[in-house]
Image (tube, rainbow, N blue to C red):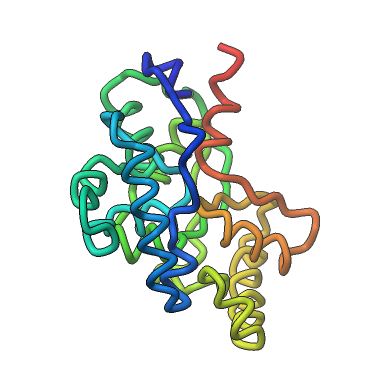
Length: 210
């Protein structure tokens, strides 16, 4: 999709995990080591587009994790949802016309609460010919929360069941979520007949054959 909008896209082979999961679990040394490696891996790139909400939130905070170059990289990190929504808004990427089909939308905590990115995923879905249907106005956690689902399985499972019930209450068979942890959690607790898809995947599907 970025190439469609005119960008040269490179995925550096020496990048590593962003370090968010390590940071969440208190493994500060490991988180800092990963951040420092990524500072080097992305040193020569103007923008770093991140398609996982948990990763983009953590990398925007790299000034606290990498002693040298962390703030510089953090300033170049953009969550994919805000970047693609911007390209749609300025006309670099197209919109689908016509009547919109409803789709449930779930807000990952690291997108809604950590980064304040709420409107952008909805704008992407509308540009894909879909109409977002709200399931939770306050954005309750789905229970995945990085490694929380492993360290606190009972509470994680309860939150997962509650989030699944919110989706199922809409009666819709698709839900958009912009974070892999949330996607896995939803797939675990939802009826298998409900598809869980990233907003940008849905948008690309709508324009890929144009």
